[in-house]
Image (cartoon, rainbow, N blue to C red):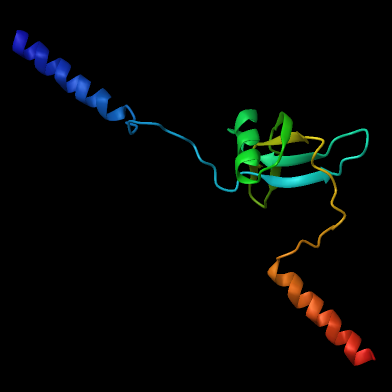
Length: 147
């Protein structure tokens, strides 16, 4: 009897053990790939600091957004607020049946920067961009042609 019971338990344990996910041991870190999409940014004024709104992945936390911006882009982040949004639900009407669909859920991060981050007055022209040199050369050629 004891042998049959042990076989029965070993079979059930093997069945359940195969369903348990196995994770590698060690320091696990979730590293997102391109998690931030800039939606809107405002410059700093004498009374208010610079702000930016990013669309991020729903599983990202405030702390991850702050670490990502400070460590990768060296931005002085002071405060991060997040809001969850449900994806839009749609009804697609066909000739024979009606199908229902839903866009994916997303999250927005509202980031406030330090007062040291100010407008440099350069606008969209940043030194060292490869496409910018070609535009400047093209403008110089047009001026030479006109003269």
